[in-house]
Image 1: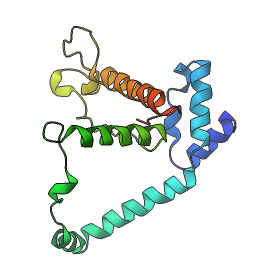
Image 2: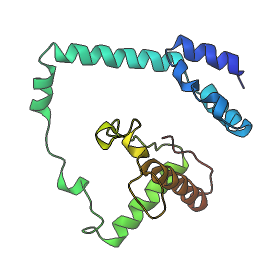
Image 3: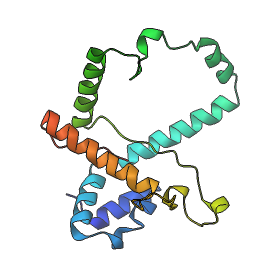
Image 4: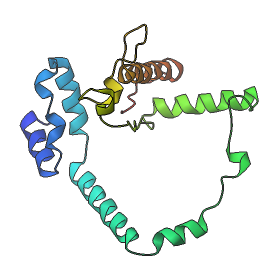
Length: 167
């Protein structure tokens, strides 16, 4: 396992030093787990990927690529779509099994697209941390985190392998 200094150097070199911003606030166990996760990242490849994506986006805005893409877009075929309320129980069970299988294989992540700062709510922190008056007193972020932990536990119990759903 790489040392903290090695990870810090690699993060700094890839423009990701901010990842360790809250390092001092972590427990020793959390630090160890986080260090292991960071050690698995190919930061140089990630940096190259991000740079390539930015260059592609820049090129797309300066060409007719967007128009060409729109000409090739078609609606999703109805047989590729499903609904909890309109699908038969067999399909639902199959989708559920496949979902847990993919989660158990660490092939699923959660991307949270939050609405930004809560300045219109009168607070100086993200809206997801705002107390919306739930009886539990939980924030929306806390609820989301608990749901992710629960889905990891369910996938482990159903498929027999410990997994992590990155958030």
